[in-house]
Each structure stands twice: as structure tokens, then as C-alpha cells.
Image (cartoon, rainbow, N blue to C red; front, side, top):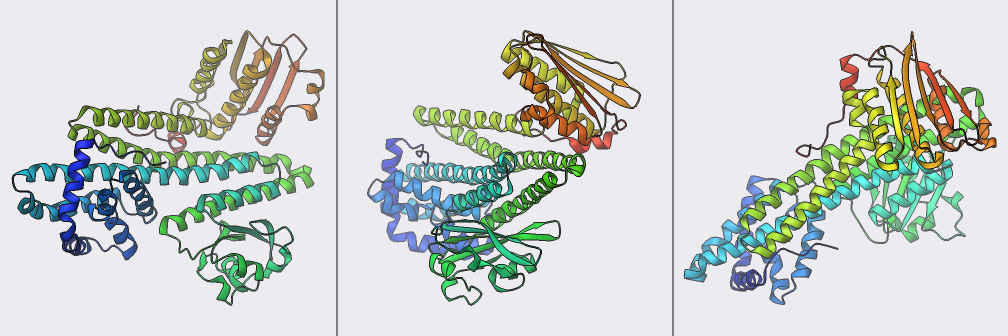
Length: 542
């Protein structure tokens, strides 16, 4: 639900007066504004129309009946549209300033001595409008980030390729408000076949959607590797499926590409003609790219179950790809969402300084506090995806932090013993050992019922040894069997084995657990490798 515009009652009354007095002149003011904006910036009609609908002229019908909530919803809708059209918030602010400048000469002649009050009311409305539009921008960016994180979560949590495809399709359908969706994958015969569908009756024959690569709408997308859109599938000769013709009034198609290879096509359809906006197209492309990576890894995982001899090699690939994906997502959160939040906070501060009334200032301050909490939340997410302590200070500091967190959150006193010759290791080695220690300490906190624990890290020649011990209840007897371990322990084994290392587990009921890891040191990381791992924190919130 959109936030309430921060306007006190007296300001609202004056704004309504200004809108009513200016209403006969809005056509001339808007024409002059359009001329100025078009001269300065070459906006297309969609962007220009959305900018015009956040001005006081568009607000007049709402203000005439005192419907500020309706006006705010209009601002949110058009703010979201502007975000999807990739109109910079600075240009939004500039367009508001230009419109106000076009209104001021009329205010002088119409309000006389009350002109300064009218100008101040217009400025207040412009500031409140910008805050609402900025909030819509933030929501749009958050929605994009949430969609990409949902795809990553689907990849990590789905137990099979089919579940992954279903999750990806539902995420795509939900984020864009689509009615139907299909994921078609290419088989060995170069035929695209439906592997997941949503929004169709159960009796629909999915084989009727099958098409050769290069033929029809989806086949052309698969061949070219480029997205496509149809705004009238019912009369589009590229479609031979009657089910699609009848259930979709417009259809978006995006290739699922990994590197230079097309794995398939994702299609989403709407119950109305709906041309995608630039940001929507880019978001669907990003979902397609990440989905292709996830689908590729899921297909590899299925192959792993069939070819146990290659488990170690391919599991290593999956883990590295997962870490790269986490770093990529964390960078995007920092570069896009984080910076957008800081801009919003800056403008809120400016608005707070401009507003004199105590109640609106308090509301603005509350909003600033919410933004600050959101920034802290994003920093925690970035830290979980790609831990900054590990990147900047190394494995030893990162393990010490995890141990302190264990003591602080669970009351388990934890000693960390580090050999003098450990030093900095290769980035992939440090990341793997950190994830192992993180998972092991997580298990101590969750299952061990321990009072104390210890972490020992040492280096012997070209090998690194990590030992985690606790004095807890130990593992059940069946857990000593390698196939009976928890998923966490299984993940540790796969990670370590993919590095050419070994895992030893010693546990007895009531006598605690000892986990010993030995992996190749893989040399010491140089400064370039360390820098490559670094992920910056959100500016201004250290």
C-alpha cells in the first residue's frame, strides 16, 4: 500500500485552492512544460506521459474532491512506470521544477499578496510528489532484486529439475502479473518441448506446443537467442497452438541462454495487450539468464546422479558457480538498491529541512529511520551472500567472527587456535574453508547442545587442516554412516571432496563431535586475487 503523502491539513487546503485557480491555465502550462522538457530531453511519449501524470494538473481531479489517497496511488503507479521506463530520478526532480517555474507567473497575477503562500504550497506538493515517486522507484528496484534472489533461492532449494522449472515459471508469472506461462527446453532432436506450464487447463495437451528450433514464435527465439513479443497471438501466424491463441492477448518470449548456447525459451502471456517496458524486458532477460544458469546446473546435477564417477569434479563446479552467483547478487544489491536507498535518504533529509511543521517532520524522520533499518538489512544480506570480513581480512578473522557470533547468540564458549604459518590462502580455498566452518558451527548451535567448542586451523606444508570440536551430545549412531549424514554434513563432504581434500568425523553419544578437514593449500593468494573477492559495503553506512 502506498505511503500517505506528508502534507498537513492547512497545506492541503491551500494546494486545493492553487489547483482550482490554475485549472483554466493547465493546458497552456502543460504545453509550455512539454516544449521545454522535449527541448532538453528526448523522452518518448510513454515517459513524457508518465511525467505529466505526476504534475498538479493531473492531481486536480483528485484534489477537487479531496482525494489525496487517490492522488498518491496515481503517483505510485506512474512512479513505478517511470522506473520501468528507466527515467532517472534526477530528471523527475528537474521536470517538477520546470513545471513549478511555469506555474509561478500565473500565481503572481492570480493570488496577489498571497503569492508566496501559493508558491510555498506548490513547492510542498512537488517535494511530497518526489518522495512518493522515489518510494515507487525503490519498490520497483526491490521487486527486481527480490525476483532475482527468488530464482537463486529456487535453485538452492529445488530438489529436482522439474521443481526448479515450476518455481522459475511461478516467479516469472507472479512478478509480471501474467496469466499463463511456459518453459520449453530443447531436446537432442532440436525440438522445443514444454517442461513446465502454468495457467492452462489440466486437460491441455502440452505436446501441441512442441516446435522445431527455428520455426514459429518460440523456435525463432531459440534460434536467434533474442527476445520477442507478440501483441496479438490470436492473429499471429507464428503460433500454431490454439491454446496459446485463445488464452493470451499478448505474449513475451525470452531465450534461456548460458554462454552462447540456448537451452530453451520462457514464455509468459497476458489477458490484455501489454507491451513490455524497458526495465521489464531487462528484468525478464536477467531472470532468463539466471534461470538458464540454474537449469544448466540442475541438468548437471541430474547427470551427476547418473554418473557417480564425476561427482567430485562437477560438484566443485556447482559450488564455485553458486559462490559467483552470490557475489554477483550482492554486488547488484549494493550498486542498485543500496545506492537508490542512499539517494532516497538524501532527499528525505532535504525534505525534512524544508518542512517547518512538527508533525510532517516527525513522519519524515520515521521514514528516514525505516530507510536506515532497510539499509542495515541489506548489509546483512550482502554479508551472508558474500562475507566482507573474509574478503577484506581473511579466513582467520572470518572464523573468529563466526565464533564470537556463536558465543553471543547461543552461549557456546568457543576457542579459536590458529597456527603462525597459516597466512592468506587462495580465495577459493578460503571461501571453502569458511563455508565449512560456518556450517559446522551452525550445526553446533542447532544440534549439539554444547557448552564449549573449539576451532583449530593449521598449515602443514602444502595442506591446510581445520578441526572443529564440541562437548555436546554427539551424533546418533546412524549418522556415522556416510549416507545417513545431514544435508549440512553432506554439503561439507561434497565441498571438501571437490577440492581434493578429506573429511574425518568422530562422534560418540554424549561425548561430543570432532570434525577434521584437510585440503590442499593451493598456494597463497596475491593482492589481485584478494581484491577480486572484495564486495563494497553500502556507501555512507559504515
